[in-house]
Length: 455
Ligand code: UD1
Ligand code: MG
Image (cartoon, rainbow, N blue to C red):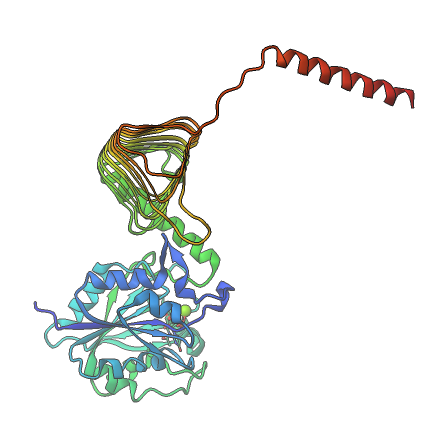
């Protein structure tokens, strides 16, 4: 079967008052990705030629999040039918099928959208296909009234008779409709109903009146989970994390304590990767094969090349690239820096806006001073260099290949290859000072205590 071209309309105009947030509901994230982007990403996988997202007034952040997809604004919230209508102009010359999806329902799978497409494309089949489901608790959902010729009507809970309310097959809200039928039927929808809204669901009634067939495909409740509150968001995050953990395990990673490993939607984990407890992956992380990440690391926007070792207690920030077989240890922060093959940065160090050459060793407590309050500057550490403990590398600065900086060196000027850099501070030794010092301090303390006792 060849599928007709398909466009999608994603409804995302609701503010989501129950979220109690200044941010639009669909901008809240699951797995570090805004809800609406989950939907748009999934639609990508089902050959959608054009996506139009319907946003509310002032939702510039939603527009930016879904760019370069088209957005249209619904200035007044007059119902799902009205929301879909806002996308008509943007799809003026589009002929084919239109999928209607919800921006706050992030887990609908590509397979589910494809089932809708396939049912729609059946020869002499329905022009409107609705995804129905059997929720454990149907309260609040529209009910699908099905007859011998298929779907006859969708009745909203508020408009339903007691008998209609007993129907357990509910409307998920997700549709696939032939474009011409959608616009023709929407034009007939009015707001004579309990909510006084233009219901998208009424297109079914109008289609049946014109003897147009309507159909139902079934969806799974856990995919159709809509987010309305922070509690829903937390449950969705938990579900999503479990999925991601299973995916990492199935992909050949070892998670020492899976329940404490947190992934982002785009985290890529290779084979034979070992991850210790309490590791958090923010957006934009790729971990290649044979990497070990020990416990308590926070990693985002970073690439960890094969064989590298990271942690425990490492923070990798955006732009960190940890090279093949490199080691990054405890209380080390790396930002916008590349640590090349086999280099070691093992203790209490900040490496920002820098390159650490292959095989270099960075001692404990080293700081790249990359920020002067106005500009960020680059530090370049050559291959095989040895940076002594507590060195401060004041950027912009270049340490040549194989150079050594002494402990505590403050390096402000470039250092040639294989040179040693020390700051002039001769070591002064005062023999016996400590004994005299302690005796003096002890006497002072005793005198003070005696005076206190006299009072
Ligand atoms: C809708 C369906 C109902 C279905 C349920 C599934 C209608 C009339 N009812 O009801 O049959 O069981 O979803 O969850 O379609 N939206 C806009 N602009 C509007 C109104 C809504 O963008 O003017 C968006 C909302 O942000 C939301 C979606 O459309 O993402 C659904 O709207 P909502 O108000 O939640 O509809 P329900 O009453 O739940
Ligand atoms: Mg709803």
